[in-house]
Length: 218
Image 1 (cartoon, rainbow, N blue to C red):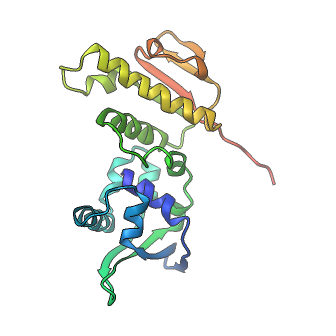
Image 2 (image 1 turned 135 degrees about the vertical axis):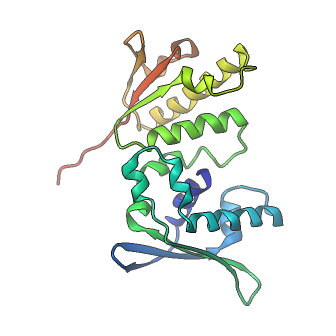
């Protein structure tokens, strides 16, 4: 899933051809190693093999199961993804992506978060944020207690606090980037709090934040 989000950001920098079947698709061609370098992974044969497997999975559309919003699941369409070796012994990618997915804005708000090595807990928190933000509803609801309960029972109080602080850190970054409204709703107390003032003690059960949507009338 994370590699897919990185891919969607990466291809926006490339030239493409648009062709129409029943829907419109963009065709991209690029060296596999260029994308490997973009994702900041170690450039070695093992990572190249993993990326080849990733593009094979894309061609089967299996990755769409990770999205929670049904309309978004229907939107994710990558009809063809092929990795092949050129005559110059360079691995190339030939990729077709539906225009609706190429223009979908949600993945691009996370583009700065994954270009560094993350701890397991950071990754889990970011992945949860991505899943919640994939919904078309501007109300984003995080059941923090349920998220923590999904961890093994050995999760201690110090680690729980750290996980909550990861949520707050990334939510505050999104707010600083003007992608969230100022007020958060805390449940079950039903109190509101400015996002800048959030701390780990606020994340008792459920945190609700609201996406900032700019509406331009033409």
